[in-house]
Image (cartoon, rainbow, N blue to C red):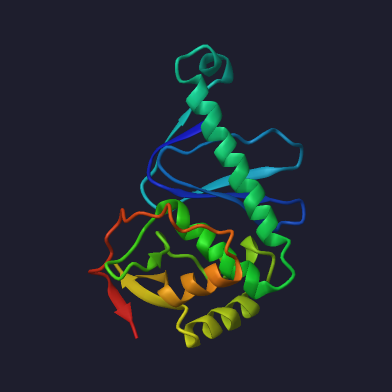
Length: 197
């Protein structure tokens, strides 16, 4: 069992055919486990300086933090299941929109304009691998979303980040009202980042 003490990153699984599958996006306080399965390789990719602790189940179960650890593990498996549901959507654009929101929501990052921002840069290849698509299709979908003013980009420390605009959020809420944004609260101010025109 692993505990993210600080920082954040993504957890990927490498299949037998060499394809990479995203399992979860993890941040400070996240707890996860990787069951041993033959021919299965998992990789944690940090997107910031990260400190990870390794715990033994036998020690945790007899400690005062057992209940909170189990609760965090439930959250982890819920996110894994949510990601699997996203991948089963028929249309790539729907998968992409839901996945972008999936990435942004746990970090609750907003600008002063109350737009959701992905907390780390992600490539078109990574997006394609995460939602079982191709780089060319992802590039086309992102271009369309930008033309519709649903996403934008901003530059920060020489890296490009994706910004989910109010139009993106309103469109998501109108087509999928079960996704609740009420719990989102500002935590990271990126208003000083350079917008890309």
